[in-house]
Length: 449
Image 1 (cartoon, rainbow, N blue to C red):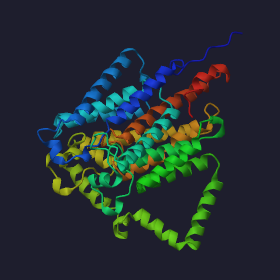
Image 2: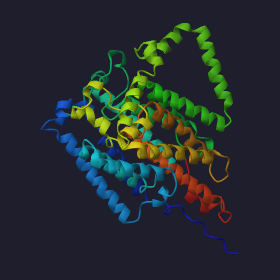
Image 3: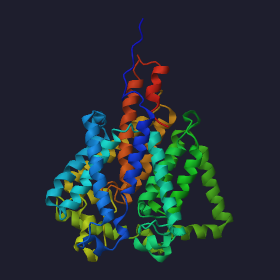
Image 4: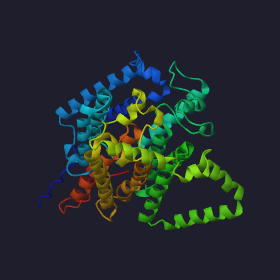
């Protein structure tokens, strides 16, 4: 009897040039994330606002758009990734973001970010995205930030004013003297760098011996140190949640007991170390400020008032643009520190609904992968739901994926596509006519680490 041929979820494995091309695009995009905060507001809204850096960013994304269009025309884009999964709801959110450009207080500003995200999604769906590549991209992004800090401290600026030491960088970010030692660069604000590194740390921790990812424990330690260096309470909480989920699903509850026992002993035997840890988490803030979610309670109240003022929103990215345009400057708030509130302010009730459905869909499909299955290996089942820990924490206590196309948004979009891809592969691998032999290796290469 002739054996039935398997149905591929994507084109057969491509040449090494495709992988190099994907890395080249990633590094190029990272180079365009130079933060506007490294310059004065007057420089951004003045007559010479389109300086060399802004021109480089705009020109780069126009080229990225041409590349994305070419890949789509050549049918290299996996459009099925948007068929009913979390990416489908995210695309719906972006539709409302695009519509909001019409009535935005800064149409050009809003339209540019809508364009960026649309291009980025097409590119990610075209370069053969996999969970392993996502982990390596996150690790490379974290390493690049450490390298920029080292260059700044050593005075190797290469003539670029956004390469500076840690102290000067955080002064530009508006940080207090008590937070001057937090890891940050022009392409890595602490809140974004930390949550991206947290996603990578959870993915590396979820690895197992059968996945044979080189140095996954070294990656885990490196990304863990990166998260701790940013001192982002949101990312630390999200990472902790993700690690707990992974340990439970992989039957490693003994690690949780050991960690809890070590923490209890440290409280009893080393009170001085506990005091140091408390000071570390407070970051120079008072206990009252910390218990009020570091001032987020008042921010939520203000954001809710603005959301109720306009049921259709003020335009995508408008809250971020307001201080630059002179509106609400006295409020000193650049985003709502909550995904739903942020989406309501910028894209109205419809956009907030789509953003919520996007998160719920990501959680649903990740949970489906977490169920025991012979079709996917352990990491491919566990890592996606673990990564949801940092994503949910960032969405609840920060702006989530609404504010901009920062590295967190890039990693979030990649996670949407990876989960949908793995769900599809799990379905196809579960078909009875697919044998677990050489023919399955085409799936294995993209089913996880």
